[in-house]
Image (cartoon, rainbow, N blue to C red; front, side, top):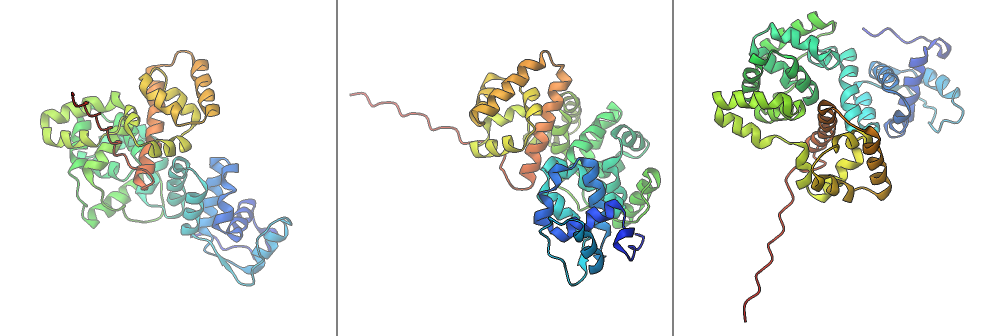
Length: 348
């Protein structure tokens, strides 16, 4: 249980003051402050926002008086925070990638579900746990992780079980509530969460498997798909149809590509383009400003020689942005229509 707030403003901790301040500002204004903080600071403040369900008006007034330049109105009544306020603030103020990394940790520290907690567990540690469990259990756990985290965990599992886990995940339906509750308790017991909670919503298994293998990269996904092709060729084909590769950027609509390039990290993009198909790099440069294009070219030149795994990791970072935008409905991954072939002139 969250400890009660002190009665006087001077007794508040620094992070409590910061949380009360951003709650008083409101989501729209507070979200604009987040990019100025580092991830650890954002997480600490967001956890406190989530814990502060109701703040007495006198405490809010006392905190605001310390920020003379604040545009927030001093309230007459108590104000409310809570987990939904923290979620809204993070969603509005951060990129999809930062929001996706920080929110699960905030939820784990406030709600405490075993599945939420896994986002902050090292992939190797989680894989070691899942390797001791039934492959069906591993499939359920991976289905409730962010695609990049699930991909990293899959890559740490023993080679001989990866295709079985992906096959089970592809065919996954919602497990019974009792089974989820037992698994959640086991995860919390192993990884240290203290509060109770349930699992997430069911997922479309084939799409989920494709997202995880996309994030895993070619080196890790290729042997999994080859093994799956031998055991369940129809299922493997369905997954392959949904995979998104870095080179598929070449075929996206210009509007979707421009949206992606707005969100993606410039350094990651430069590394991802290292040694890629000239047609793809040309298309990328056509959709960024001359200034950004020159900066990317300079980063590529300064990088010198890059290891294959560094290039692939950068491409996975770009793909994470692509999948996040697609899942939120901001872009479509449908390839652009091919131009109509020119009609042959009719001979006279």
